[in-house]
Each structure stands twice: as C-alpha cells, then as structure tokens.
Length: 339
Ligand code: LMR
Image 1 (cartoon, rainbow, N blue to C red):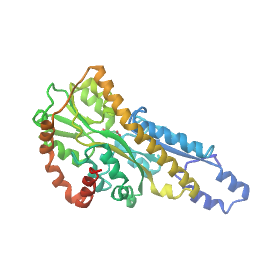
Image 2: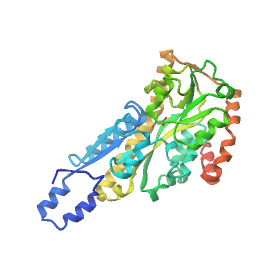
Image 3: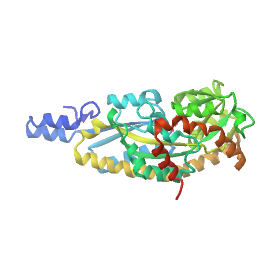
Image 4: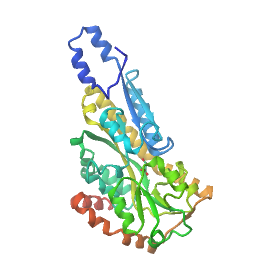
C-alpha cells in the first residue's frame, strides 16, 4: 500500500474499516499512512487568505508530524473560481475558501453578505459572523456536503474605473464592471445603471487591461496584489460592501476522518482563521498605501454627501433579495452594526 492515502478519494474511516479485516501490522501501516490535504485558492500568497492557508499548513503539520501534509495551491494554480467547488465535491481538493459572493448556487442565505452598505465596518462583520445567526450559515450547505469550518476576513470593497471622475453614482452609468458570480452584485450594478459582467478572478487583470470591462470592485489587498491599480485610472474609497470568505471542506470527507484528527484539524483551522482575521486589516492598509505610493491610479475620498448618494442609488437591492435571504437574517446583520 502506498504510504500516502488520498483521503479525498477514499475516506480514512472507510479505509480503516476495511483494515479491521487485515492483520495487525497491516492495520498499523494504514493508520500511519499520511493524510494529504489539498487547499486550493485563487489569490496571491501575501494576502489574508494566502497567509491563512499557509498558517493552517504550519499548525496542522505541527500537530500531526508525519501524519498530515497540507499542500497549498495559491493563485488559481490548481483550480480557479469556476472549478474549485466542483473539485471539492469530487474530492480532488479537501479545502477551499471562496469569497462569500460565490455561494449563491448552493444557498441563497449567504447572499446576505453582498447586500450593499449592510455592514458599517469590519468590526460589524466580525460581530455578525460570531453571532448565532452567523454561525448557522456555516452549516447552511451541508445538504450539498459543503461544511463551513470558519469565516475569514479580507476587507471592505473599493470601486475602480478607467475614467478620471469617480465621485457620484452617475459617474459609473453605462460602464462595464467585472463582478464575482453573484446575483446581488449584479443587481447592485444594475441599480447604478452600469453593466455588470460575471467573471472569474483570474481573468480580471486582462479584462481591465484590454478594456473588456471598465472597472471592478474589490479590496485593497486584491487590487494591489493583482495589479489592478496599474490598469485603472481612479479608485473611490466607497467601502460599500465586504469581501470575506468561508473556509469550507467536503463534509463527507471531513466526517470520515478519525475523531482526534478531525478535532485537531478543526483547532488548527480556528487558530489559522483567527490569525488571518488579525492581520487582514493591516495587510489591506499596507496595500492601500502601496497603491497611493505607486501613483498610478488616483485615490479619491468621498464626502458624506457623496456616500449618501451611493447608498440611495443601491438601496432598492435590499428589498429585491429580502425574500431569498430572509428578513430575520438581515435584521441580525443590521443589529451587528451596534456595539
Ligand atoms: C474576487 O473574485 O474578486 C475575489 O473575491 C477573489 C478572492 O478570493 O478574494
């Protein structure tokens, strides 16, 4: 037997069950076989998600020396947006961390996070994710064998375009924007009378560079690490929404792990996500400054009146999705804006 058991294709417990029919040495050999966890993601390594994946690898391998190997694949190297969920369900990878905007094929509830201007800041997002309503969402896709292990922060979104003026909603009228695969984000840009186009993350730079789209929304961290700021003229600090992640696993695979291994990996993930959440704000602040220093795209500040105009323009989106998301969940999110 190969010393590396591909757990994703063959649950360890099932393998151990089969081993009960074997001789003792054979059972031991199997029990000692290494668990390989493939963790695939779409962003650069020096981002909150990239750093969290590496921290999980460090902690998991420390806890289970020689027993667990975590292989991290950044930058859509292994699977991009379109394929990573399917790969998880097929057992080709064991962990991924899609942005919360990429789940609407699996649950309508997680669309909550895309509602524009729902959360005042990252502290509110944090409070909501730690609440009972927030935690419940981690288990909202178990009927599809998708289990959320933890939330992870990136940060608030900014808006960028290839135009000189980006101050008020009317400045984006008629422009083409790349969006993540989210119907809420589509509605948001339609409310602004712009043209949204769903597109995988790995394709955005080229689409901006060649003018296939005029603009995009993302965090400072992604805007910097993907060099979007080099092919955009103006960035407005709208903070109109959030890009956060759910670190997910294939529930069937996860439940097939021996209890002690599952508990240890769960602990390692909780610790890694806490680490990621702690550094996310600093990484975004660092990348914001790097973009300003690079002096390629102009960063514009918005006044209170400007921000109110953006809020008013996208306000109808909430009503549009209230039925899918549920008023109670929206109320719980709104309540998290109060300390
Ligand atoms: C995007 O697709 O714009 C981002 O959410 C990618 C990511 O995972 O941060």
